[in-house]
Amino acid sequence: MANIKSAKKRILVIETKTLRNKAIKSKVKTMIKKVDAAIEEGNKDAAQAALKVATSEISKAASKGVYHKNTASRKISRLSTAVSNM
Image (cartoon, rainbow, N blue to C red; front, side, top):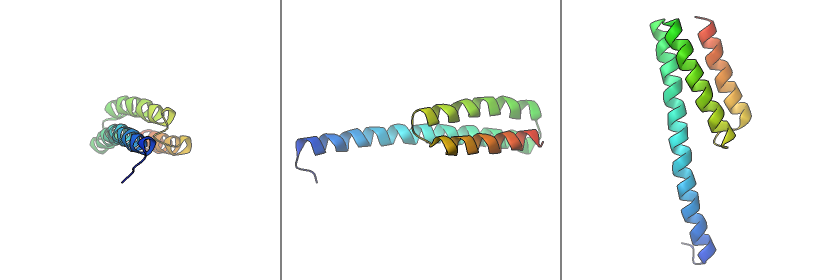
């Protein structure tokens, strides 16, 4: 356990950031699942709408530093390809 005051503060700050990152990652995963579900149903309109929302969420996560920009780009690309191949 940390004894120095600044180290104790860093532990608290890291815990807060970890919770924020987990929430953002969870939201992104949920949006990806919605796109996948629409693709499974074969509903192209719903898939395109869900793709637009998912793309936005993934981009926001990348801009906040939750995902690396290449990771975000890869996720968006795979989703876009899956929707366009319907």
